Length: 204
Image (cartoon, rainbow, N blue to C red; front, top):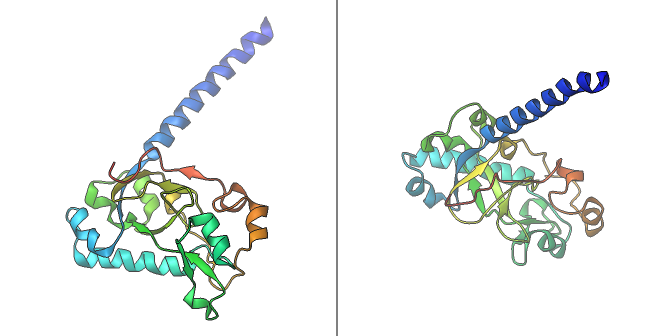
């Protein structure tokens, strides 16, 4: 009896801590503008200026060139991103490296235009993020850790959507064997865990 009385408060405390942690995680979710082209930016994000849109898109394009997933064969790339969704990496010079197409943009630097704010908004750090097609549909970040539905509008995401991605430029591209050994695009062994986009997609 004495042992039960001693352990019960600790159990209650653990339950309370878990509930608090879950609530905190839910508060981290934020609405982020999503666009599929430069021309869509000013028309779909209220108050966004052409200069702001161009700056955000230029940043995401530069990140795309530096951090996009790269593969040693188009078949390997398409197995991860879908048929017809891969192109030769011109930066490689020889055309023997392939990368997924840039499908859209997560406009973290323009979150404030939709009223985004709070502690979670700081995770965006004024960054806009390139998005890539997944073999099963939708779009995802370079490491596959955040996925959203394809389209335009807004997506509900957590701070992990804006984490810095490692450069793949000049690195050895992924082969079919390396993809198999890691479990594929966005697998936990290479990206630290695949996390969906907080239950929301474009147009939410």
